[in-house]
Image (cartoon, rainbow, N blue to C red; front, side):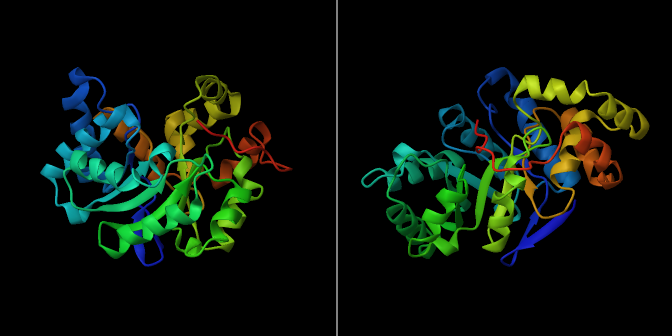
Length: 282
């Protein structure tokens, strides 16, 4: 595994995502096995989930994984829905997530997206959970630069640890201003949808002639190539979903590959942004 250290915390560049995981009982055993395989074979110790995923079913599946591993060896990222980030419901939503996960703390707790909630209230609640040892760090998701500016204008906003946003080689808009802004304020970017959940965009990537040449030359899968793009500079973490051991093995070939010699050709097909673009959100 390759790692980065952010604010004194060592994190794997590639963790495991759980969107659409845990929803099909017939796949539950295979999905748990894929998590354990990723942790044990590749040190994919960061696990990303949300109360929204499967209406809590993903959290419940992760609880099964936690029973089989030492809790302190794993870094759990969870997210609260905007409608639950309100007075009177915030702490109950958090406690429900704790119960579903079967743990007594969450390593990183995020506001999933912002729909006008009182950001000072959200920060105060996050800081309260942190002071009680119920979370280790907090952050946000789907915040563009203007929203980050509003967050950082609040008391305690500078304690935001991460901003989790959509980022992959077919969706590079955040390279123009958001990634530089986050770096300037010591906030870690975390990429979701690194494999392009938008099937038309993924097909555009996999069918691209340069991509096919690179994959043939290197033996990489298109997915591993996409992951190598996201982690190419060693300053962004990500957590792709992998529902089987085989998918984990294919994806993790990204760790042994240096994409930089191929970037000029890839930039020709999937160019970096030349101007401000709207934030991509799923």
